[in-house]
Image (cartoon, rainbow, N blue to C red; front, side, top):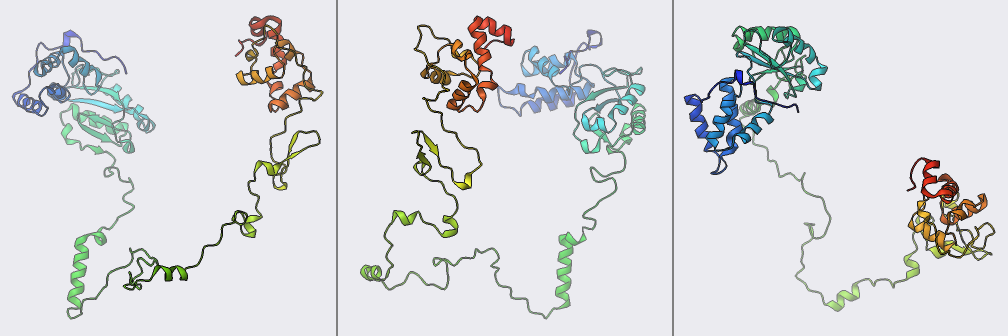
Length: 418
């Protein structure tokens, strides 16, 4: 929001007073608020002062602040915050507010502003030579469907063309603004289609008076006819065969049955069988179902577990088994040195991965920098990284850190290690 300031002292009146009618209105309006909350009336009182004077003067702000018992700075904050208050003199016969929001701009609002520039003043917030007209661009005025539009005082004029706005400005300047009908200026009714109504073209059929007249005519045509006996509708009743709501069953029965007799006539529950409980119908039982881990894992000749993937899952992605710790491609391990390197400086190595590497006997940058392709593949498979070691270029990072620490890393990669 742009900075809003009061008008220059040269145009400010020396004093302000409400008219007798407005003063009575203001005193009554203040009483609408609870005691101690009278300052809430400042917005409507300032609006009434603007309607009386055409704009909000410094004298009016101070007078209203005195009426409400509030500091001048608080009243000035309200006046300068809300753009509905005009802080400089405006046209005495019309102040044209042109909507400049997207729908109106798309429908020709810029052309309307050109009309204001040519007929009133080149710049906003300036009155014309006679002091009767002024204009400004404002945000949405709330009739986007009838864009473009302007507001003059409290009335909106919509569906405008530059020619029609020029006519309206001339009429207001001549003092005949009350002859202009507010609303759409192209003949449409409110926001109805410009081509005319497309629905409810004949309301006769839906009027209650029409239905009453037709019913009365029908009764007069057949005075002797007996009224139709229409039973209650069951359309909204739920359909159910539950014994509790079935009208054909009268319950509870007045005859009581002995518990022993009832138990003898009842069907016995089948004995529980865990094996049978897991058996479904053939079409269902043939579908691949989740099994326990022990059903899938088998022991290989090397002692490492392998995954027995069912045929239904063949070709899908699955977790590969870890390579053996005794594999020839495993990087050589060393005893933990007195000073170990911070492997977390290598991008892609976090606290957890650093712990795994240490458990494999990897403690220094030099060890990682010396890894061969086969050794990288072994560590990659052991960590289940799927090529991440080569993608993150661990070897090159380790070489830089081993050679000159963070300084060499920044020189090689152009950034600090993370």
